Image 1 (cartoon, rainbow, N blue to C red):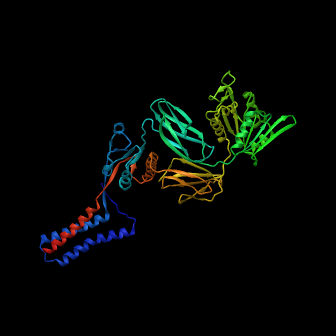
Image 2 (cartoon, helix red, strand yellow):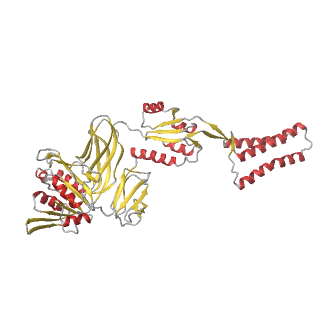
Image 3 (cartoon, rainbow, N blue to C red):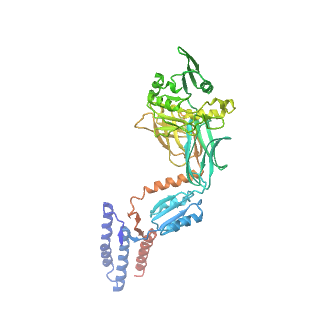
Length: 548
């Protein structure tokens, strides 16, 4: 069916159409007035040529096109990372589908285009943008067996804070995935054959630029980079009924690491001993025994948002009830062994109880320690004494235990930066700055980032930035932060396809579609056709006039 691409609502277009329509009678009038002596055949030829020229001009103004019905066809473009057999299997599984060579995309009339894999040729993106035909675009990522996918981690965190790495992998067999910092494995998980969603967590041990390595079955598969900011020192107060070597050793270790510590222990009924290390302001963290759950200082600390850690349990069943009644928590335990202790590692043990999972509690991985948020954070630890680890020469293990526990109990730090890695060059990346006093304009590298304040918290700011260069990029001095930007890696290819498909989908609303299918396409005459037609008409009139 012939239709016209003419704007009937535009005044200028209507005036042009009237002029072209009036041109035919004017042509004929001038023709017969000036050529009254021509023979009948010459007059017919001259009239025919003038009418043809007029008709060509009228058609050029109206721009006719044809709606041609098409059969639904799905095209599949496979990335360079996809084996041919995989692409062929997908083609066989989809009706009315065929593999399309990237350079032939513009010549194909497709209802749906499937992008398979991540390594898609760049010309596909430009051809789809320039093409007058806009098929639906679907993206199917492709990952080989034992290839990590959907990795994410914290791009910036504070020293001592828990780094959490999430992802998935299709494992070909039972094998171990571990993350290591230097020569030390900091966390691991056993993978089963098939799809596995995994989570690895560990404290940020070092300050500044940090890199950890992922190993799958003793093979290095990836290196993850993040920045660890200098952490604010903790202020810790011990409140104990009687001093013991475990708590004194922990207080000493905290003090040696730059934290302020006050150690209050009851020696007798009317005598209390107090020790101060690195004096500071109000405590961020209280460490005490379950018997002190009703202590006024502990209750006030929880109400004011401080953290409290209960340790040194003797009878967890009754002592948990005491803590719950005093602070409104919901800790529950069950006995798992008749032995006096259960082993956590070669040098670490715990009471023969396990903490029952609860939706409002967070259990620290690898250790029988749970945290519940009330006004502040309330934590309970079923660990036995940890100082034997130091006596056995395992000071690194001792440090790992307490760094991991304290990572869950630290208060929010000023100008806390939250960025989900990997940060991709050329893609949109989100940044969140909480507990912040900085202006809305944040400098990063040689560029500036304008952030927006949160409607719920004036100290929280959010922003979107698109880095252009790869490598380490520094934020402004007040944040004391750097970001690692991925420039050339599988992350970049994945982000490129993902962002293009998301942007492309916004351009499809104006197409004539029904039930999700493209029913017809517009077939237009090319520009060169109109140029050639009008040029031929003028040439024929000029030649005819020469022989008249």
